[in-house]
Length: 319
Length: 319
Image (cartoon, rainbow over all chains, first blue to last red; front, top):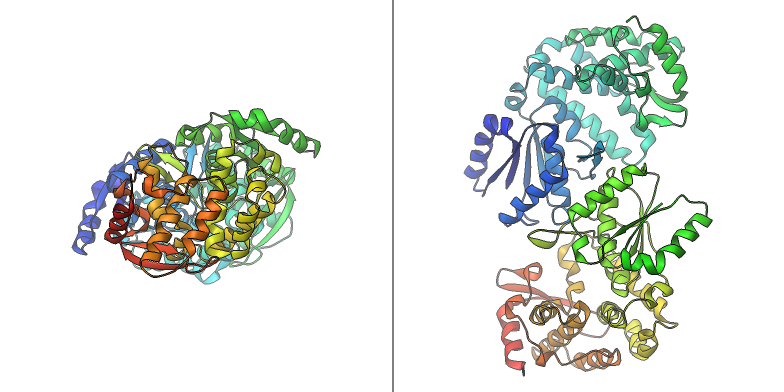
């Protein structure tokens, strides 16, 4: 078993994991990489290939990714490309990685010219989420990660949406219902990807909040976490859908839960990089594919003119 | 469309391919890499990622691998890992690549510590084999490539075996039945891999001739091509199977076709690296999985003690 972790996570959690694997009779090696996005590159993968070879790792061995999105993406890429693929487990230590990086089998590295441009689709054998791991992440990261669960709830599961709203304070403290909420979110996402794995259009539900959210994230110049920007994006897009008459009363329910999670709901006050609205992935020429919520727990997808959404955002902003 | 070729193949065939793609209305870029195994490395993949990004390649675009095994493996790896996989075609220009590198979706790069240790399983959308391409390869390479077809014929298809024996001289000249023989070999191999893709044991048929052949290849210190060594290995392994009483009269039929292809059948005179007999992939502890031919066009697999095969080879050699 080769455990891959960054220095920060290794210091907190590697000893317990390595010890329990050794107690179970496994031969274990720990490979530590520097923390941060800089580790999600081809040269780090090459370093890890070398370590795997030094340890004589073969197809019967196992890679364990212990960490946040960076380590899950990096270790997953290495597992998918070493000896044409060896088994791996994901042990996400952040809420976002638990719901996002580990499901659907996306692995990724950054290229010199752009983020996440190198990668494979290679599902882990299992995703193991531990409350002790989640409790050690910065509170703000945890909250931003919960937005991913909220997005899935709003578009797919009204019961989960109610639970998140009702239990918000306990979720923020990583208390009792947290693992249940995450498990449900993981199942929702895995089902969605399993059903529609290669039908790009059907994945659009996962981009709810991203058409505007990514433009808010760009406008904030790294002062907002991805989840914080997506929460604002979900509100903006929903208000547009309401203004267009496609739904009613949704933005209010969403804003209530967003506030209960301690997040801002004031997207109007944000700097927004308009060129980023409905970035590359969602564009189809001058149109974009937009997911919205007709009723809490369901979703629809429309092809809409990007210019109309941009105009709406521009008009409503109160910077 | 991004065509990837090495300098030698590009000089011979790139203009015709690029022109015909452009005539079909495609926007085409040609990316040339140095010839030889040295190009099958991560740094070359990184260079190609950069070129793809410069050209704004996305998931709707196409990579075309034009060349032998090195370029097919390299371009396949790049296609499988760029944007989590974009479509690619293989246009093999050598006989070996036509039957071997392009089928089953194996892609591979060399690592600093070993060959083909980095890779993915990622089938091309199509494999396009052109007689004009095959006719331009060195005759010796073509002959060695035909051994792969002979191996498939001996273990899976008696009719193909007869055809190869009967048409040997025309096959050697890349004349009329060559593409039909290769098409049949490709179908046999693709069926085999499609049926048993991840059942390692069932792939053992593909290693017929390799337990001893790879030891002969190692003993020859690069003076033999892989196919030449496998032909000798098939004969040695078959003679052992006959000595053990598992089959009869097969080695004579095999030797006749091997000679008709202009290849040596005298494995007894070869230098053989005994440590290489049944190398890593076929070993199970002190045993190895050996495929043999009970009747032409069929195969069986046995788990046998490596020492017994080594002893047989040692005794029969007449160096």
